[in-house]
Image (cartoon, rainbow, N blue to C red):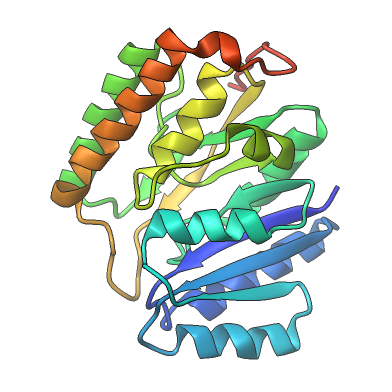
Length: 251
C-alpha cells in the first residue's frame, strides 16, 4: 500500500529540508512504500529551489510548484490531486508534526480503517510551545464542533490526518481554499460514516520561519465550512453512503 505524504509549504526555507528528510528517514526505517508530494505554494524565498535539490537526491520526493492563486487549502488540494498513493497523510511543512506519528497512521490504515485522526488532547498526546491564545481558540472551536456534530473527536481542526485515497475521492470536490480545509477534510468523512481511528500525537511549536495562520481573518471561513458540512449532514446525508459505518476510537 503506497503512502502519499502531502506537505504544503509557503516560505519555509528555514525548515523544509529537515521536515522532508526526517519523513523520508522515518518511512524508510519502517519499510513503508511512499512518495512525498511537497507543494511549494507561491514561495518568494528558496523553498522551491530546496525542494528541487532534495528531489534530485531523494527519489521519493516529488516537488509541485504552484504559481496560481495562493492558499493553504489550494496547496493541499493540488497535492491531493497529484498523489499516486493508495492512502495519504497531510503533514505540515513547518516541523510541527512528528514523522513517527505518520508511521502510526499507516499502521492503523493497514488494520482496515478508512481514516486516522490524530489528537493532541487525549491521553499520551502532547503539545509543546503552543501559543496560549491559539490554544484557547482551538479548544473553543473544537468544543463547538463536538457539540454540533455530536462526536468524541476533539482535534478536528488539525490538518495532520491520514485517509484512504478512496475517501478523498469520495468527498471531492473539496471547497475550502485556506486553513478551513482542515475542518472540511475532518468533518466530511465523519458525517458520511467512514471508519475513523483516533490516536494520540505530538505537536511542536515552530522553531524557524513565521506562522501563516491569521486566526481573526480565518474564523469566518472556519465557521462557513463547519455550517456547510452541518447542512450537508442534515439536508442531503442520504446522498452519501460510506461503505462502512462503524467508527472506532483507540484509547
